Length: 443
Image (cartoon, rainbow, N blue to C red; front, side, top):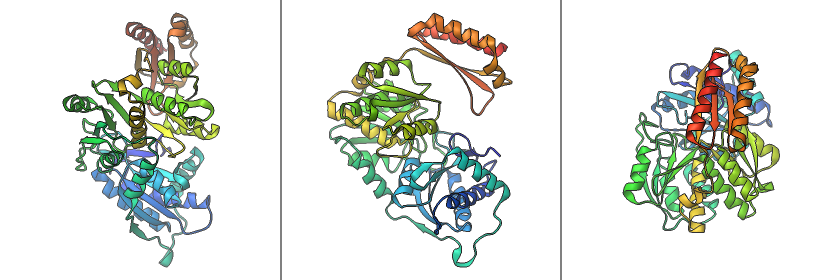
């Protein structure tokens, strides 16, 4: 059926993502996941971001879970990583988050976590899809129907967990946090204050409709203006479900995920906490990040784009840190998924621990000029097999030498080929990317 994308089931709420589908996915998830666990009455943790459609879909998910015999623990509006943590903390068999992350309000999504707060492997997602299609053969009745209750300590548990993972106090640090009118609106400012920071919160008034609306990690202008106006030490931007974090320094300059990953990697490297002196990054990470890590004696393990691939590499090699340019960072000693709040706390702790500004810390990565061109195509496979494209890429790599690189990546969801070029100058990157895009389009 192809229900699951790179990060759960996502679509237009009450359109292709209907309450009926949400109920079916939830029930199927219980039946599949319990089949892979010990025989007992299953428990599911359910949380959401503040989208208006989340109320409707939450009701449908609860109906699906309880009709499949699972007890449900509602934790309310909380970040996605909080639900992952709470799934493990409560010893639940399943975690469900209703969120479309950084997508605009009309969309919503269903993210699933297995026991321990782990993301589902592909084969389990395929089993759930098949179960959605066939539906249940029987349903529990009487006392076997699941029950519903509200958590009374979810926020406190998550906050204590994060504060326990902060390497240093944040006393005296002034930060502006953009909560994207999303799931972090109520918890992020208080957790940062609990760590000692002086916090100004913006975009922290969700009304169910304004999530990600010109704010958050994909719209940084408001945060930049607020940091400059307030004289804060830095700004932190979350997305709608707060699994990612970007930042701006005191001057308003943007600090992206590559730079944040470098800051955290070097801090852990110095403390002997970066296992095997290796960090995981994706193929989209800037070449300047690789240069900075090489200079510091840190190896980089590269994966395909997507935090699920970063997670797979971290688990497979027993590593402590990985992340993406978009701001998804995973600290495996404290989290099972990307956590924007945890990332921000680590970055701010590094500032306090070293007495350095964010600009000084981020300067370790000298970003190479980068150009990304999305080329519409009729058949991605034809482009991948084309000798003309391969020859054009090889010619470009000869021109760039060690001072740049070329990456052609088919989109996982659209008929697009993404052409990315890094070079010594922006003009060179633009020129080579434009020439390659023409070859791809012609093929």
